[in-house]
Image (cartoon, rainbow, N blue to C red):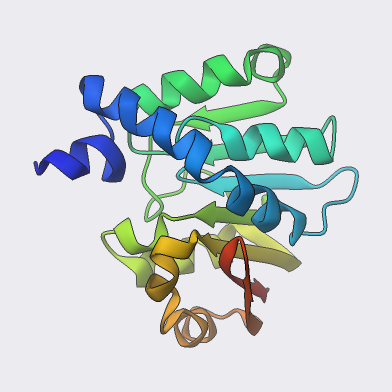
Amino acid sequence: MRLLDRAFDRPEGWLGRLGGWWMAHRNRETIAWTVDLLDLNPGHRVLEIGFGPGVGIEEVLDQQPGAEVSGVDPSGPMLEAARERNRPAVDEGTVDLRARVAENLPWPDASFERAFTVDTYQAWRDPVTALGELERVLVDGGRLSVGFTPGHADAAEGLTDALVRAGFQRPRRLTGEEGVCVIADR
C-alpha cells in the first residue's frame, strides 16, 4: 500500500491517525458546507460515506440535534476516531458507524432521507456500484451531497453524468470558496 493511501485513502497505523487529524482540520469548512446543502429537517436519517475522524457526523448533529446518523468508512482507525469524537451520540444509539466500503452498504432500501460524502468519491474502487448503493438506500425525494475540497475539485468532473446513470435526478454542481459540491435528488 502506498504511503499516502495509508494516511488518507484507507488510513491505518500512525500515518492513518496523522491523516485523520489533518483531514479533520483541513476539510472542516467543506464538510460544513456540504452538510448545510443537505437542507436537514428534524427526523431525517442521514448517511455519511467515508466519515474519517467523524467531523461530518459532528456537523450533522450540530445542525440537527437528535438526528439519526449512520456511516461507513473502510478504515479501522477512522472508525475508532469517529466513535470517540461522537461518543455521547454513539452511546445513545443515534449514531451507527461501521467499517465498510461505499460499494457494499449494510442497510435496507430506502433507509435514509439524506446522504453525503466529502473527498471520498475519487477513492471509491467502483464509483458506479457505490452510486447505485446510495440511490438504493435513499428514500424517494432523498438528497445526496458530494463535496470536494478546493484541492480535489477536479475529481467532480463527470459526476453529474454518473449520478444520472445511477438514477438520480437534477444533479447540480455548485462552486464556492469551500470547494465544489454536487447535489442530486432521488
